[in-house]
Length: 232
Image 1 (spheres, helix red, strand yellow):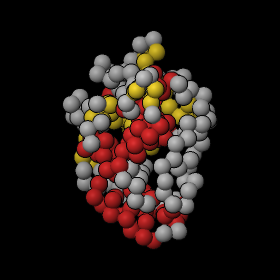
Image 2 (cartoon, one colour):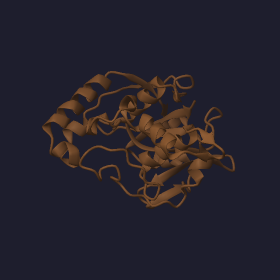
Image 3 (cartoon, one colour):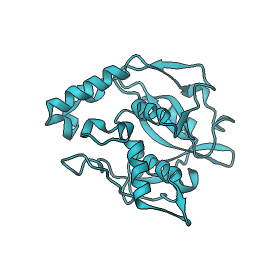
Image 4 (tube, helix red, strand yellow):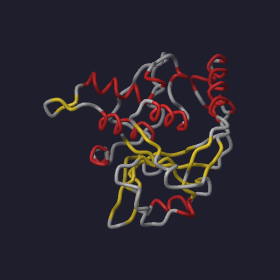
Protein backbone atom coordinates (compact mmCIF):
# COMPACT_ATOMS: atom_id res chain seq x y z
CA UNK A 1 0.00 0.00 0.00
CA UNK A 2 2.64 2.53 1.02
CA UNK A 3 4.76 1.79 -2.06
CA UNK A 4 1.84 2.55 -4.37
CA UNK A 5 0.84 5.56 -2.28
CA UNK A 6 4.27 7.17 -2.46
CA UNK A 7 4.04 7.07 -6.26
CA UNK A 8 1.29 9.70 -5.95
CA UNK A 9 3.48 12.23 -4.11
CA UNK A 10 2.96 15.78 -5.48
CA UNK A 11 -0.18 14.73 -7.41
CA UNK A 12 -2.46 17.82 -7.38
CA UNK A 13 -5.35 17.92 -4.91
CA UNK A 14 -8.64 18.57 -6.72
CA UNK A 15 -12.07 18.15 -5.15
CA UNK A 16 -15.21 16.78 -6.84
CA UNK A 17 -13.42 14.79 -9.56
CA UNK A 18 -16.13 12.12 -9.34
CA UNK A 19 -18.90 14.63 -10.08
CA UNK A 20 -17.97 15.25 -13.73
CA UNK A 21 -20.72 13.09 -15.26
CA UNK A 22 -24.46 13.70 -15.11
CA UNK A 23 -24.96 9.93 -15.06
CA UNK A 24 -22.96 7.99 -12.46
CA UNK A 25 -19.96 6.29 -14.08
CA UNK A 26 -16.67 4.91 -12.83
CA UNK A 27 -14.06 7.68 -12.89
CA UNK A 28 -10.34 6.90 -12.94
CA UNK A 29 -8.19 10.03 -12.69
CA UNK A 30 -4.64 9.56 -11.41
CA UNK A 31 -3.78 13.17 -12.32
CA UNK A 32 -6.07 14.81 -9.73
CA UNK A 33 -7.11 13.34 -6.38
CA UNK A 34 -8.81 14.22 -3.12
CA UNK A 35 -8.24 12.41 0.16
CA UNK A 36 -10.76 9.66 -0.60
CA UNK A 37 -9.98 9.03 -4.28
CA UNK A 38 -6.26 8.91 -3.43
CA UNK A 39 -6.83 6.08 -0.95
CA UNK A 40 -9.25 4.32 -3.31
CA UNK A 41 -6.78 4.39 -6.21
CA UNK A 42 -3.96 3.08 -4.01
CA UNK A 43 -6.14 0.36 -2.50
CA UNK A 44 -7.28 -0.75 -5.97
CA UNK A 45 -3.65 -0.93 -7.16
CA UNK A 46 -2.71 -3.05 -4.15
CA UNK A 47 -5.68 -5.40 -4.63
CA UNK A 48 -5.52 -5.82 -8.42
CA UNK A 49 -3.87 -8.95 -9.83
CA UNK A 50 -0.44 -8.42 -11.39
CA UNK A 51 0.08 -10.32 -14.65
CA UNK A 52 3.52 -10.35 -16.29
CA UNK A 53 4.53 -7.42 -14.11
CA UNK A 54 1.58 -5.20 -15.02
CA UNK A 55 -2.00 -4.56 -13.91
CA UNK A 56 -4.65 -4.94 -16.60
CA UNK A 57 -6.86 -1.86 -16.97
CA UNK A 58 -10.06 -3.93 -16.90
CA UNK A 59 -8.96 -5.75 -13.74
CA UNK A 60 -8.13 -2.42 -12.13
CA UNK A 61 -11.49 -0.90 -13.06
CA UNK A 62 -13.38 -3.89 -11.61
CA UNK A 63 -11.38 -3.67 -8.40
CA UNK A 64 -11.91 0.07 -8.05
CA UNK A 65 -15.63 -0.33 -8.68
CA UNK A 66 -15.85 -2.95 -5.91
CA UNK A 67 -14.21 -0.47 -3.51
CA UNK A 68 -16.15 2.66 -4.45
CA UNK A 69 -19.66 1.29 -4.97
CA UNK A 70 -21.98 -0.69 -2.74
CA UNK A 71 -21.50 -4.37 -3.55
CA UNK A 72 -19.57 -3.31 -6.65
CA UNK A 73 -22.70 -2.22 -8.54
CA UNK A 74 -23.14 1.21 -10.12
CA UNK A 75 -26.78 2.22 -9.81
CA UNK A 76 -26.88 5.99 -9.68
CA UNK A 77 -25.30 8.54 -7.37
CA UNK A 78 -26.44 6.90 -4.13
CA UNK A 79 -24.78 3.57 -4.98
CA UNK A 80 -21.44 5.29 -4.41
CA UNK A 81 -20.23 4.80 -0.83
CA UNK A 82 -20.25 8.41 0.34
CA UNK A 83 -20.02 7.82 4.10
CA UNK A 84 -16.77 6.20 5.20
CA UNK A 85 -18.69 3.97 7.63
CA UNK A 86 -20.57 2.56 4.63
CA UNK A 87 -17.30 2.32 2.64
CA UNK A 88 -15.63 0.35 5.44
CA UNK A 89 -18.63 -1.94 5.92
CA UNK A 90 -18.58 -2.74 2.20
CA UNK A 91 -14.85 -3.51 2.23
CA UNK A 92 -15.14 -5.74 5.28
CA UNK A 93 -18.23 -7.50 3.91
CA UNK A 94 -16.45 -8.34 0.66
CA UNK A 95 -13.29 -9.47 2.38
CA UNK A 96 -10.68 -7.07 1.01
CA UNK A 97 -10.41 -4.86 4.09
CA UNK A 98 -10.38 -5.38 7.85
CA UNK A 99 -11.07 -2.88 10.60
CA UNK A 100 -8.22 -3.61 13.01
CA UNK A 101 -9.22 -0.89 15.48
CA UNK A 102 -11.70 -3.03 17.41
CA UNK A 103 -9.07 -5.57 18.45
CA UNK A 104 -6.79 -2.82 19.74
CA UNK A 105 -8.99 -0.06 21.20
CA UNK A 106 -12.00 -0.37 23.54
CA UNK A 107 -13.28 3.14 22.75
CA UNK A 108 -16.43 3.33 20.64
CA UNK A 109 -18.71 5.86 18.96
CA UNK A 110 -22.32 5.28 17.94
CA UNK A 111 -23.06 6.53 14.45
CA UNK A 112 -25.59 9.30 13.94
CA UNK A 113 -25.50 10.30 10.29
CA UNK A 114 -27.49 12.97 8.49
CA UNK A 115 -24.88 15.39 7.13
CA UNK A 116 -25.57 14.84 3.44
CA UNK A 117 -29.35 15.03 3.65
CA UNK A 118 -29.14 18.04 5.98
CA UNK A 119 -26.77 19.84 3.59
CA UNK A 120 -28.23 18.61 0.31
CA UNK A 121 -27.68 21.96 -1.42
CA UNK A 122 -23.93 21.41 -1.10
CA UNK A 123 -24.14 18.29 -3.28
CA UNK A 124 -24.80 18.72 -6.99
CA UNK A 125 -26.61 15.40 -7.40
CA UNK A 126 -28.73 15.86 -4.28
CA UNK A 127 -29.77 19.46 -4.81
CA UNK A 128 -31.44 18.57 -8.10
CA UNK A 129 -32.97 15.25 -7.03
CA UNK A 130 -35.49 14.73 -4.22
CA UNK A 131 -35.31 11.01 -5.07
CA UNK A 132 -31.57 10.94 -4.31
CA UNK A 133 -32.12 12.83 -1.06
CA UNK A 134 -34.68 10.23 -0.02
CA UNK A 135 -32.29 7.38 -0.86
CA UNK A 136 -29.45 9.06 1.07
CA UNK A 137 -31.76 9.46 4.08
CA UNK A 138 -32.49 5.72 3.96
CA UNK A 139 -28.76 4.96 3.89
CA UNK A 140 -28.13 7.33 6.80
CA UNK A 141 -30.86 5.66 8.85
CA UNK A 142 -29.50 2.18 8.10
CA UNK A 143 -26.02 3.19 9.31
CA UNK A 144 -27.09 5.26 12.32
CA UNK A 145 -26.99 3.34 15.57
CA UNK A 146 -24.04 1.19 14.53
CA UNK A 147 -21.01 1.22 16.84
CA UNK A 148 -17.46 1.60 15.60
CA UNK A 149 -14.18 1.46 17.49
CA UNK A 150 -11.70 4.31 17.29
CA UNK A 151 -8.57 5.62 18.98
CA UNK A 152 -9.23 8.95 20.72
CA UNK A 153 -6.60 11.50 19.75
CA UNK A 154 -5.35 11.81 23.34
CA UNK A 155 -4.36 8.12 23.21
CA UNK A 156 -2.20 8.36 20.08
CA UNK A 157 1.48 9.21 20.75
CA UNK A 158 3.75 10.87 18.19
CA UNK A 159 5.57 7.58 17.63
CA UNK A 160 2.29 5.84 16.79
CA UNK A 161 1.33 2.43 18.12
CA UNK A 162 3.07 -0.87 17.48
CA UNK A 163 0.06 -2.43 15.78
CA UNK A 164 -0.35 0.41 13.26
CA UNK A 165 1.77 -0.51 10.23
CA UNK A 166 3.06 1.40 7.20
CA UNK A 167 0.32 1.58 4.58
CA UNK A 168 -2.60 1.07 6.95
CA UNK A 169 -5.58 3.26 6.04
CA UNK A 170 -6.15 6.04 8.56
CA UNK A 171 -9.68 7.47 8.79
CA UNK A 172 -9.88 10.64 10.90
CA UNK A 173 -13.07 10.78 12.96
CA UNK A 174 -14.91 14.00 13.71
CA UNK A 175 -17.31 15.75 16.07
CA UNK A 176 -19.07 17.53 13.19
CA UNK A 177 -22.77 16.73 13.71
CA UNK A 178 -24.12 14.08 11.36
CA UNK A 179 -20.72 13.00 10.05
CA UNK A 180 -18.35 10.16 10.97
CA UNK A 181 -15.06 10.75 9.15
CA UNK A 182 -13.60 13.89 7.58
CA UNK A 183 -10.24 12.78 6.18
CA UNK A 184 -8.40 9.71 4.88
CA UNK A 185 -4.74 8.87 4.39
CA UNK A 186 -2.12 6.19 4.82
CA UNK A 187 0.11 5.50 7.82
CA UNK A 188 3.71 6.41 7.05
CA UNK A 189 6.52 6.11 9.59
CA UNK A 190 9.53 8.42 9.30
CA UNK A 191 12.40 8.11 11.80
CA UNK A 192 10.15 6.40 14.34
CA UNK A 193 7.34 8.97 14.05
CA UNK A 194 3.86 8.17 12.67
CA UNK A 195 2.94 10.61 9.91
CA UNK A 196 0.16 10.72 7.33
CA UNK A 197 0.56 10.26 3.57
CA UNK A 198 -2.49 12.05 2.23
CA UNK A 199 -4.00 14.35 -0.37
CA UNK A 200 -3.86 17.67 1.46
CA UNK A 201 -6.45 20.34 0.67
CA UNK A 202 -4.26 23.02 2.27
CA UNK A 203 -1.03 22.05 0.49
CA UNK A 204 -2.98 21.27 -2.70
CA UNK A 205 -1.22 17.98 -3.39
CA UNK A 206 -0.33 14.54 -2.04
CA UNK A 207 2.25 14.90 0.73
CA UNK A 208 3.66 13.20 3.79
CA UNK A 209 2.63 15.36 6.74
CA UNK A 210 5.47 17.47 8.14
CA UNK A 211 4.26 16.92 11.69
CA UNK A 212 3.29 13.69 13.47
CA UNK A 213 -0.26 12.48 12.89
CA UNK A 214 -0.87 12.88 16.63
CA UNK A 215 -0.09 16.60 16.39
CA UNK A 216 -2.32 17.00 13.31
CA UNK A 217 -5.19 15.60 15.36
CA UNK A 218 -4.51 17.75 18.41
CA UNK A 219 -4.28 20.92 16.33
CA UNK A 220 -7.76 20.51 14.82
CA UNK A 221 -10.69 20.77 17.24
CA UNK A 222 -12.98 18.96 14.78
CA UNK A 223 -10.77 15.84 14.75
CA UNK A 224 -11.59 13.35 17.52
CA UNK A 225 -9.35 10.38 16.70
CA UNK A 226 -8.75 7.69 14.09
CA UNK A 227 -10.01 4.39 12.73
CA UNK A 228 -7.34 2.04 11.34
CA UNK A 229 -8.10 -0.25 8.40
CA UNK A 230 -5.89 -2.80 6.68
CA UNK A 231 -5.92 -4.49 3.30
CA UNK A 232 -6.57 -8.25 3.41
